[in-house]
Structure formats: structure tokens, C-alpha cells
Length: 350
Ligand code: B12
Ligand code: SF4
Image 1 (cartoon, rainbow, N blue to C red):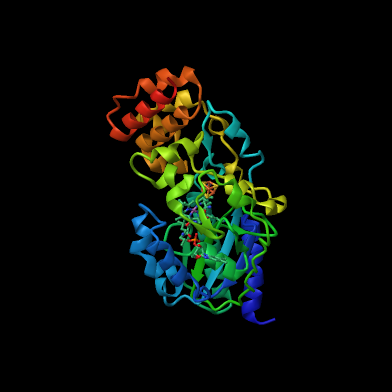
Image 2: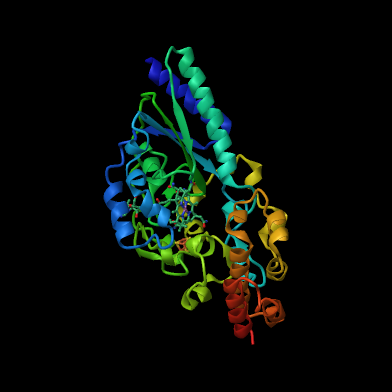
């Protein structure tokens, strides 16, 4: 075994000790299909209001341009598999459904800390072998095509719902990367194993897939509840059901989840107050209460107004007339989108 292989073996071991479920390596230029596909996605305007995707598409399309000195990309998967059935909450319409990934601590913070520790270890281990290594770590924080790199490195394959799926951990995992100037041995890409399965496509409440593997984000509930600013089209509001932050329906439908691995970090386990929160209690949050409740949570990013807008759409879909006064109390809210959502909800519950 040469020095590179020994270093890689030790790196993978270290990554698993750190809590990642998988660690595989590819080259930054191993995703030649991405620029064309990304351009087609942006030309079709599937990115909607996410203007940052179009602005930095030259980097997102080609990781070799992002950091030309990088020779290897270490791809890592971190499980956040839920212990409960995440679709059960959809039957309790007076309560809000928060996507599994957002029911506790923000993964950006947790994964990034782990990536930094691993990267520091790599620098030291390379130094011990007489090599200088430079590193940069990313987790959804830069224009990096994480899913395509994950597939190229063999972490898993991009499933028909467009997320990375694995035979070893299903699809409940975040993806992070360590770019390095070291030339480490690469792994084989993972072939597509979706076969004739299409349960993820059929599970989508808003028909957001234009074709297998292709998502029109403008119809995805995750985009609508997290990224989209302003009033959501009425046709789509009605399809949100009680989903107030993100959506897990396509992920939950994937048959490969029978191989899901328990999350190693307990800080992803659902917070008791976010598993099935009462819509009536969420609608009354003001700015300060919202910030206090969601400190350290990814939900904090969307702010009180967008969050309460989502809660009001869920109230409008609840068919629970006892929630009408809650909506009525917000029809003159200072935020025009919240006021519009409140009027819509109150009217639907009349
Ligand atoms: C923008 C974004 C979103 C957007 C758009 C998602 C999308 N599919 O485009 C929205 C807000 C909708 C979103 C939602 C979610 N997201 Co998101 N998101 C991202 C982000 C920041 C960029 C993704 C991106 O570049 N999209 C652009 C398009 C062009 O990429 P794409 O869908 O992969 O498109 C490819 C396919 O269409 C493919 N293609 C086209 N034709 C064909 C044909 C074949 C045969 C194949 C194989 C492929 C293929 O080519 C395109 C380019 O590669 C990444 C982080 C990152 N930096 O990568 C996280 C990321 C993808 N999201 C993640 C998560 C967890 C989610 C949610 C599950 C959150 C939730 N529960 O609400 C949902 C899932 C919704 C879904 N079905 O995708 C994780 C996914 C982890 C994983 N296992 O893959 C990521 C990687 C973040 C992370 N670091 O962990 N997300
Ligand atoms: S996250 Fe929900 S709305 Fe978005 S594509 Fe998946 S099932 Fe459809």
C-alpha cells in the first residue's frame, strides 16, 4: 500500500469515528454532466426566486473552477434518520408538520464543526507523512454541486426525487465535503439503483417533478415554505396541508430507507415542542418570541413573518373552525403577506 492509500484508509476510519456514515473521494472535475443540466434547470426557471443559483452557476456547475488548486473532494454523508414515521403528523391538521431535518439543531453548524475537525486531522496526518495539505470545507454553504459530487464519489446515487440515496443509509443524510490539494485515491461512482421504483414521484403533493430526476423547485413545498417570499399562489396553498417548514414526502416514500442508519448525533432528534406543535400556539409568535423559540434551529432563518404566513396557510387547510379566531386576529398584521394569509385562512374556515 502506498502513502496515499494509507492516508485515505486512516481518513475514512477517522470520518466514521467522527460520526459520518460514509466517506468517499472523487476529483473536482468528475461531474462533467452538471454544467449542461444546471443550465437547462436555470433556463427553465425551475429555481424560481433562488436567484443565487443562477448568479453563481459557473461555480455550481464546475467544482474545478471553485478552487482550481483542489485535487480531491472528500464527500461525507451524515445521517439524520428519524425514529418516528414523519408522515404521521400530516393526519393531525390542527398541528404543524416541520420537516425532520429542522426539528432540532441546525445541521449546517453541526456538520461544519465535524468537517473542520476532520480537515484539521487530515492536515496533521499529511504533515506526518511529509506532505503539505490545504483544505476547504463546505456544507450547503457554497455553490458546490453536492449531490452530483456525492454520486461521483460513490456515496450514493441521485434518486428520482433528485436527492442522494444509498444502499447503506437510505436517503436521510446530509452531505458535506472537504476539498483538498492532496491527491488521494478515488472511489468508484455509484450507479443508479432506482430501477422501476417511482413512489417518491407519486408521493409529491404538488406534482413538483416534471420528470424523474427533475424537480421544478417552484412547486416544491420545501421551496415554497422556506425560500419563497410573498403570497403563495392559491392553488398551491391548498396543497401545503399542514406542512409549515419543508416537506419530507418524497424522502419518506423511498424504499431504500429500509437500510437507514440511526443518526449518530442526538441533536437531530426531534425537540418535544417541534414534533407536533399546535398551530394556534405558533400563529401568535411575535418577532422576539419567534427568535427565542428557534434560536439554533434552521427555522430561524426564514423569520417570523414567513413562518407565520406558513402557519396561517396550514390553519386555512385545517378544516378546524375553532382556529378561525386565530386567523381573524392577524388580518390586520403589519406584514402584508401575513395579513393576506390570515384573510384567506379565516375565509376558508367560515
Ligand atoms: C437549492 C436546493 C434546494 C431547492 C431545490 C432542490 C433541487 N432539487 O433542485 C429546494 C428548496 C426545493 C430544496 C429542497 C430540499 N432539499 Co435542498 N438543497 C439545495 C442546494 C442548496 C442546491 C441544490 C442544487 O444545486 N439544485 C440545482 C439543481 C439543478 O440540481 P438537482 O436537483 O440536483 O438537478 C440535477 C438533476 O435534475 C439532474 N438531472 C437532470 N436530468 C437527469 C437525468 C438523470 C438520469 C439523472 C441521474 C440526473 C438528472 O441534473 C441536475 C444537475 O446535477 C443543495 C446543497 C448543495 N450545495 O448542493 C441542498 C440539498 C440538495 N438539499 C437537501 C435537502 C435535505 C433538501 C430537502 C429534503 C429538505 C426538506 N426536507 O424540505 C428538500 C428535498 C426536495 C427535493 N425533492 O429535492 C440536501 C440533500 C441531501 C441528500 N441526501 O441528497 C442538500 C444536498 C443539502 C445538504 N448539504 O445536505 N433544496
Ligand atoms: S419535498 Fe415534498 S413537495 Fe418537494 S418534491 Fe418532495 S414530495 Fe414534492
